[in-house]
Length: 177
Image: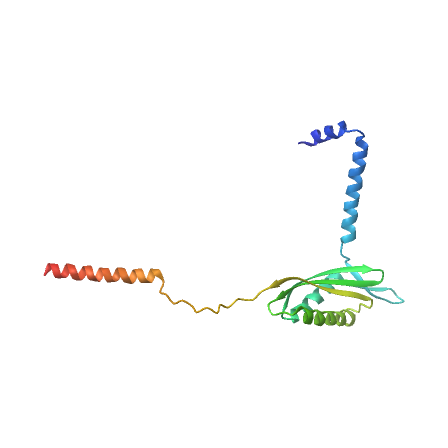
């Protein structure tokens, strides 16, 4: 279906202006949703009489990543920042490695991030720091079954062929004598 065919189909419907307005409203709603979900580039750390002090989103993400690297059972952190009024809320999405205990990691990570965000970056109005476990990466599984020790088929067949060759050579040598 081409654009011209679609245009003619719309023209044959009663009140095509209504359809155009519906399409425009849907496009505006889609743009509005994109704007609302957008992450802030900067977060207000604190305000003084001289002005506001801002922290970039990149600095916050870097701080969260380095904090997560210090905990050996956490990998691939992702940060979502939401600002409501003067309060900044964080959602940290992590993947747990084998042996990681979510309750311990959550408590350690939340307290460490709250301290680092306030002391290092100076963010005063911290809200919630939500930790979301997005996956679990299992370690290597060790089999408790005894290992089978069989010689590989290639080596066995080569030894068999060599044995046959020796027998054939000895048979040929005995026939010549």
